[in-house]
Length: 264
Image (cartoon, rainbow, N blue to C red; front, side, top):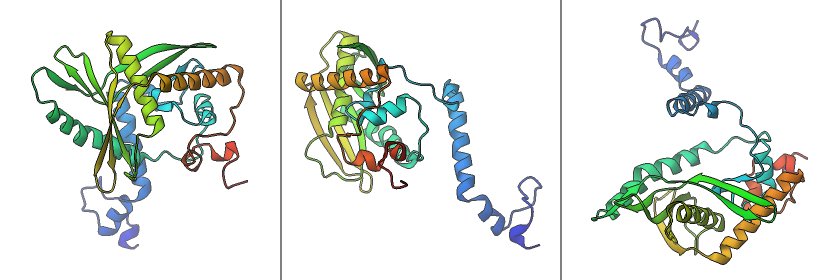
């Protein structure tokens, strides 16, 4: 028996060989380890329900992060259709670490002044009226600059991207920010009408920012999207495959089911 084929010695007290270590540090082992880490973190956070299968999302509910994206994709997602590809966890993980370990520290230094503070996030939960009844919008913001009573002053949206070739914020990010501004305004009874969208390039960590104000006409377009989304969910009719952005098809979890995949 070669050293590479010898039994696992981690529990025997013997020192593993280089070959055994190489077998331990391989892709499947990492995937199993990462899944277990996520499983345990959900339990620690009091969210064990994330470890089980997801339930269907009621027709009247929507997340700010879903706004102005492909109606068909959101339809499949809300119906809990099985995803055909694995989530790009590395991108999400990088974005989370950038927000928590870099952007929040930067913003905390920026607001280092009397009467201003930084909250990591703020929860919104409100209803929007549409022609087919109310739609419930629920979600958690990125960091918010607040006053000494923890009342919101300025919303931020932290995004990571492959390229900073942007002349304006991406519309679905701006839609997400509008939902948060509207929700915070209603919740706290004050006008929260400003947001800074901060984009960080993943390869270089260079940053570009956009200061935007609440646009009532744009909000009407978002509400119309909510109405269309709810109507398709209520009647059980598949929306047309008409995404607003070309990249949505390329990275969609439901390409084959939709008919846009390559395995036809």
